[in-house]
Structures are given as C-alpha cells and as structure tokens.
Length: 563
Image 1 (cartoon, one colour):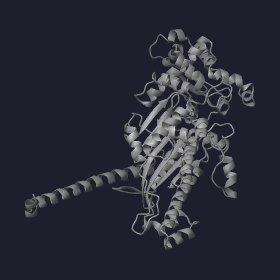
Image 2: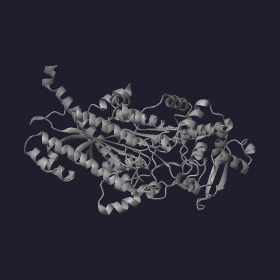
Image 3: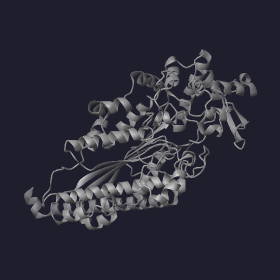
Image 4: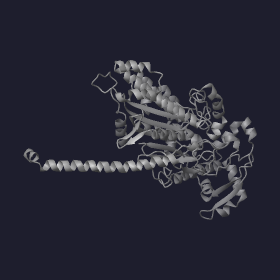
C-alpha cells in the first residue's frame, strides 16, 4: 500500500499543458531519464537476436509512453535518453575526426577495458541540455509575444547561451532527473549523476541546475561493474575510471542496485552502493541480491528457441522489479499491467514473465538469505549454485555449462581455447585428486590454497582459495525446484569469455568492494556537511524569531482583546 501511495504522489507533480496568459505560470516540470546500456549491449545491434539488455527495454517503455501521450495531445516535457553500451557502436553523432578513435574504442577495447566511457558521458550531458533547450523554446512559444518570436529564432542556440536570456522568465518549474544503467553502464549512470550534481548550485532549498530547481529522483543499477581504463580485473583495486567518482551522492532520493549472486568472472568485480558494513548514505536506498549471472540480472542473453538451452526469461523478473522501483520514484514509464494493456506486442516480446519462471524463482528466493551483508547474501546464493550443480552431476542431469560446450560444436572460439575445466564437475574431480577431500572435509571451516596457471596465458598465475563451504555445498543435495531453476534460467558466464585467458575457476569468488570517494567528491561532501550545519542553524534562528514574535503578540493588548 505504501509503495502505491508513493507512486501516486510521485507521478502527479506535473503542471497543466494548457496555454497560459500573462497572469499564469507558463513553466513545466521537466522529466529527464538517461538509460545507459550494458557492456556489449546496443538496442539496435541486439534487435536481430532479440537479446536486449534491461536498460534498452526500459527505454523502449518510456518511449512508448511518450509517443502514446503525444498522439492523444497530452504532451509534456518527458525525455528518455538512450546511451549505447561500451564495446558497441556509439549512438551519438561523431565528426569525421572522431570516427577513427570511436572505431578503436567501440570494439574489443571497449569490451575488455571499458574504453569509450568518457565519450558517452559527454553525449549524455549534451542530450540533457538539448532536452532543457527544447523545453525553454516550447514554453516560450506558448506566450505568443516577442519572447516566442525570439525563441523560434534561437532553435540552433546551445542551452547555456539560450538560458542566459530566458532564465528570468521561469519557463521551467523543476527538473526531475533519473538514470538507469547495467554493468559498466551502471558505473556510467553513477558517474554521470555525480557530474550533473557537481554542476548544480546548492542552498537550503535544494539543488539548482542552470538556475532551475532539480531533484535527483531515481538511480537504478543492474549489477555495477566499474573496471574502466585498465584491464578489467577482479582484484581489490578500487580504481575508478579516469578519475570519475562512482560513490552515489546522498541527495539521490532513491537508489536501487540489483546484484548478481552467482557471477564469478575475474573481469566483473561488483561495486557496491552500500558500505562494507551494510550502511547506506541514504536510508531510502536498497541493494538486493538475486540468483544468477551478470546478464541473468541485467539482460542481454538471446531467447532459447530450441527448448533445450537456458532461457532468458528470468531477466524479466529483475526488469519488472526495477520498473516497479522506478515508478515508485516518479519515473515516467508504463507499469507492467499498463504495458500489457496498451502495447501487448512490446509486452510479450520484452516484458512478459512466464508462470514457471516466477514459480521457480520464488522457490529459490525463499531459501536465500535476504538480510546480512551483501557478501553473506552472495555466499548464500553461491552455496545454492554449487548445491544445484552437484545434484545435477549426481543425478546425471546435464548442467548448463555441459550443454553449452556441447552446443559449441568446435566453433573457432573453442578451437582456440581447448583447455580449461570441461565443466564444474571436472574441476571438482581435479581438486579432489590434488588433495584428499575426504580427510579435509572433517576439518570444520578448512580452506586450501592452490597455485593455478592458465594454460592459455601463463602470466595469469593466481592463487585459488578453495574453502570448506565450496565443496560442502557441492556435496549437499538441492531440491527439485532449485535444480530446475539453475538448469533452466542461469547461464554459464565463464567458459569462453575472453577466450578463457582470464584466470579460470568455478571456485574463485567474485570481488566485492565499495568505490573510494575522489578528491572532488570529498570536497563536495565537506561542502554539503557545512551547508547542512548552516541550514540547521538558520532554521533554528527562524524558529526562534517566530517564537519570539508569537510571544510578543500574545502579550500585546490586541491579542488579549481578540482572545
């Protein structure tokens, strides 16, 4: 009930779209939402295989809502901005001189190192300013006077220049800003939000962007991966890309991160929005662990058309969760049911959750830890993962990674990487052969360190820490619902990734860390702390003045006569 009330309030902050006269306020509440696609994801390139990631699906939802509203004359400034994922063709305009660099960045370098992130931040900035420019011009046109004529003549003028001449006319009431991202796109969403906040003026009434009040309504993150500008690693390096700051500012009113509980790739460390101790900078934020790999959470796998592979339908559960959270914060989108009613084709193609998917997820979720630190929740998810795979091995059920290898049929990629464990069961057998598991398992809380060489790139000598709970979970039988969920909906993200040159093991755990605040971010935090203190003092002073004024009035003869 509380979420429904919040959603109604958040979605009824617009002003009328009717023409105004000289005595009316002709300003609008402007809604701007920026959708940063995931690493290797691009809404246009992914069209043929129908493997859109979730930010692209949410962008299509926002566009469908705007197009429907525009068609029936309910026009209001609602801008949905899409930014293609790093490692894919850039969707913004480029000069002839920029194209050569973009071709290098938007290929393997973008996939492996996250190159092209800065260009996408710059594009997002220009698109936000373009949206505000359009609002200024459209609202000035409503006035039907010399200001309207001026606005029409300035269509090609940049927002900053146009705003110098129009700011005093209050053509924008407020800006509601939101951003949604996946993978390195989630890192971009975080960096971009800070970039906008740092351009704002702040006082006791809030933030102003280019003189207009702005509220940072929502930041939706699918499994942030923040390895930019360096070879992507799963080391605890805490390096931000090109000095960008990924720590979410506490003035973001609602921030939600959905975490992949089973991702293990060395190149995909998780960047938390919470502190390691679980505390949040804002009590309205949340971080939720889901079973599955990185793209099981953020989308991007193609549908299983054979019926024997791994379905992409589970990513629609996290898609719906993010949709619901965004709506509660006031982002302009169709709800799940509204989309089904108004755009059935889009709903069925990109949103519809199959009953079996929901049923099996509910069964798994009921057995997962839903409290404690993110690390402990991820470990609980990994225990279930190992248990499901161990049970499949003992029952002779082909696991997803076994089916994936069979389907490769000696493709060029497999021919290049014939080494590495054939599957998780093979790695277990090798570990048991190296060390007497039977004797070790009797030692409570034991762990064993192995030195492992990658057969492809021997520079990747690394330490593999196998702990008691890894193999204990493997030996524990999982129930049928858990087995069926992992068999049908959770992909094997490790095998074949980067031709297996990264350290390969199903028992190397994902690194989880929180970003460090940059020097600029620390300055912003310090200024905010000073401002809070000043505002509290000013408010106390105002309250004291009101109290004194009331007391003086109470003591006056006029007050006594009136009473």
